[in-house]
Amino acid sequence: MHIGKRLKEMRKRSEKSQDQVGHGIISTSHFSNIEGGRFVPSQDILYLLADRLAVPYTYFEDIHIDDPDLAVLLKEYQRIIEGGELAQIESFYHENESKFEFIPSLNQELYFSLLRILDLINANRIEDADQLYKNKVVNYVDPSQVYMLSAEIREKYFYVTGLIHYIKKNYEESIHNFRKTITLTNDSMLKARLTYNVALSLFYLYEYTSALKYSLKAKELYLNLHDWARTADCYNLTALLYKEVNDYESAESYINRGFDILKDDSKKTYALLLHNMALIKIDKKLDEEALEILNRCIALKEKHNFNNLFISYRSKMKIYLDRNDIESFKNMMEVASLACKTESDNTHLHVFQAQLNKYQKNYIEYENLMDSSIKYFFEIEDWKSVKSISDEFANYYVERKQYKKAYQIQKMELHATKKIYREL
Image 1 (cartoon, rainbow, N blue to C red):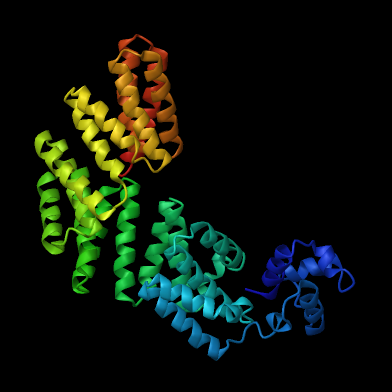
Image 2 (spheres, rainbow, N blue to C red):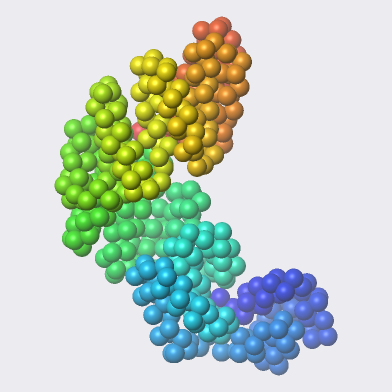
């Protein structure tokens, strides 16, 4: 890191060109060399540039000298963030906001920025976190020079970078950065959390065998920490992974372990365990048991205001459709439409609407809804949904002897299949 990166950020923030900032002080080419780190300016020039950019002179002084008082404040900020109390974190930040505005030390400013990004992510201010990451991390840190940062800052850098990529669904990058953090951290809780995050990322990449290894490892780490709630999360994920590889006996065993360790049905994970147990029953063609469990799951979600009711309604609709219980299916569609929260939810509902149209022999409506749905899921790379929809849709065109359309759908199905089973 060098002063040029800070100058560049301040110039862009002021919405000025290099010529405008340097006019009357230094030439544009000279200013460009400073921003690029090819020239170190004198203190006199930095004073003039600070004045031009309306920042304190100290912001361009002592950039490699840490402030001991600020170091104590940053440690306290980190401790409060790790505590997870959002109100306390917000209060602390606002009380000390002026001290964080212009931090002379480049290292301390980077460390603060990484902590602030964690703060924003915890508060679900994802766009703000991403913008700060671009401005204060991407623009400041050359990935090839990360090894020059202190071990403490490297740990936070890889952790935050992993989280940003995870949020953006860049799962391979998130795994890479989480693994780096695991090797650097001495924090047992963080190591457990990151191991679980790697398992989740591998799950979303359909790499179930590898995900199982990390999920089981995370379970052991949380058990050693006596963190029963997060251990239950690991049981739930492990069960889901065993379900995906068709080991239903192991899947049910881990779900039951989750129930044993949680006991309190007010935890969101309890509803997830119920939902996943219902999915296992559906796979095993035990529809009545699945419906009973789904009803318990839905009642629990409604009682505690848990989100994602729609996914449980989806499972009920699938059962009714498979049983050709059209009346129950239509009633459930009306209820499910009120629970749609995302574009993905709406698109899944469109698939069910398409199937109802097919049953009613409204073939044009069926084709339009299926076509738009499969294109949406392909675009967002939801390969399991693509495969599920394309299989039915391609068969529909084959039955109608529209082989060219069937072939196009089969190509999408093949692409999705390769994505899902690439580990094999």
